[in-house]
Image (cartoon, rainbow, N blue to C red; front, side):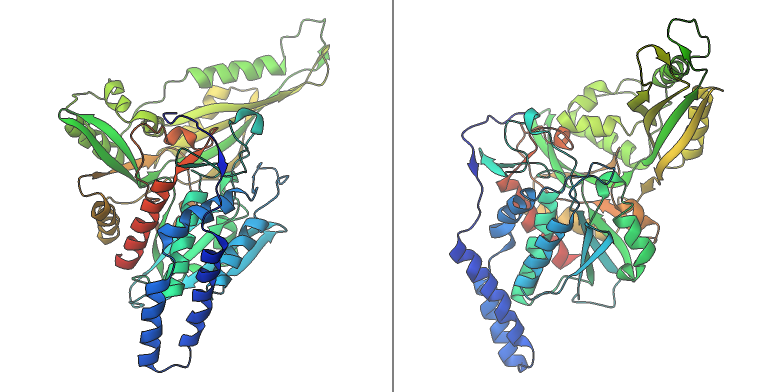
Length: 486
């Protein structure tokens, strides 16, 4: 994927002396209580001068989180997020912060901590990540997916991209606020959710349903799958562009259930459930979903055309999309609604025709398209195939304008002044969907400046997932800058 693989080594982060010093700074923070303002100011100044910075410990935190297997298989059989949540709680406690650990089910743990801002009269902000990861089959990887090995300046492992990298950036900055006695710009609720990789039933949606008070006063949120860079060709060379996620397609996970007549495998049967299901799958796969460009997609394509100097039409976008490298898959998925068959199940013996057959279909729809998509799927499935909704979630869209967006842009550009920032729509989904039920506008902003030859986007749920340590340090700086200025 663009980076050669050298000799691997286990990433351990700072030595124990440095870690003990960092913990000591956290304990000294408690001495501010009951002091005079002058003494407190002197203590905060001394602490700020000696504290470990977010960029100095973000790689360590990322590696330690990756080593905690929090695989989410979607059926309740995984290890859960409890160990990862306990790790986050310990990191907060080390610097004198009291987090709250909440379990929706045994082992399905979410951590919340709220920091007071410099201006509590302003609307609050939510900054959130998720602690679960999709499974990783070690046989497919070059390294153990839960060892957090370092190769060629990258930390490898499941969650390095999705999204223990951002978890580490968030946690490193929370710890820095506590060590130095400084505050974010406004009241900020930090959340490390469970269960994002299975739709958030035991994480974000559960928290919104059962503990919405944590988001009282919050109007905006930032999370994953945005703020990372791509390098595109230009007439004069290359241009680095950061993709700020402003929209997400909606989700409809469906089960097709075909009915037929059971019988002996040697007897002709014109009511075979498998055949009926196969015909429905064929119709769905062959359906040409119409293209429609929502505002974020149109602005991305228009600006990309201006940067690259490539002319394109709505009917021929391939040359323009190709300039995005691995990120083109995410963008291509937002040009229309989609429906992909992902699982099949039927039968129990070679010579028995079953009376039912099922298929799982992952549908993603653009804002405003849910009803039309469902009607189309039911029509394509046909009269002998039922369509069951297993899980659904909304499409969301936020403006690429306003004070929060400007704060994200400026935080990136202060670190990378020659870059540009572009909006885009995510073909997948995040926990921002759940927060949207509370009227909270959500954005994807996990800032990473990436090497031009790193095929980053395909590593979401892919093999050999990895993140450059330099990118982590960049992200920790940008996120901290944003939190102090937004």
